[in-house]
Length: 247
Image 1 (tube, rainbow, N blue to C red):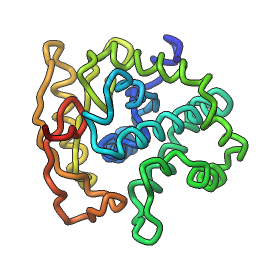
Image 2: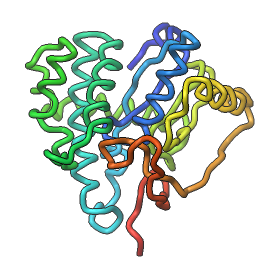
Image 3: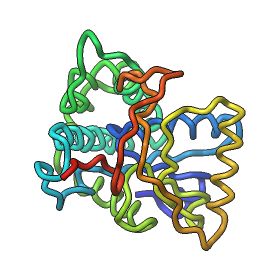
């Protein structure tokens, strides 16, 4: 958990689960904006597995969701250890490496299952690329770190309420507005990225703003999901930040 002084070091707190494709797409947009606006972003944790701990996965979600959300929790355990031992900036670098491998890479030859997203075989070479110690993989199975992930998940939900998903963005912390999203399925070009961001800031800076929402989403333009740039992903109906099974 960040101290009040650390909170004021950043222009934006970005709460993510590393297996969420929409959080990844939004993170790429945020990185584009941060580079142009010289924003300081603190990459923070929200676990979809913890968020949905009260849900019966078998009756509410497609078959792969429990394994995927559990993989996300495993990765957040490791990122918790990374942050404590190597600093907050290392989290952003590792998230960038993991997200690019999961979502921006075609997996036609070696399909990536939901569970494999949190596997040591995926993580180990990415740690090496990020020049982080190989023994950090041991944190994947260290459930003593779950309490820290749970505390940060509760922190994120305290800012927005519980009927949300990922990502959660907290603008100008600690006093600024926070909300779920924005959820986007296509990455804007650099000029449009700033225009879109300024519209979001316009909402975020109005103290009375609460929600702007539609549940229909395109599958994001991410190679790992089989949707290339220029293609339009299949439209799906999402509820409470998750694609629920139809009843």
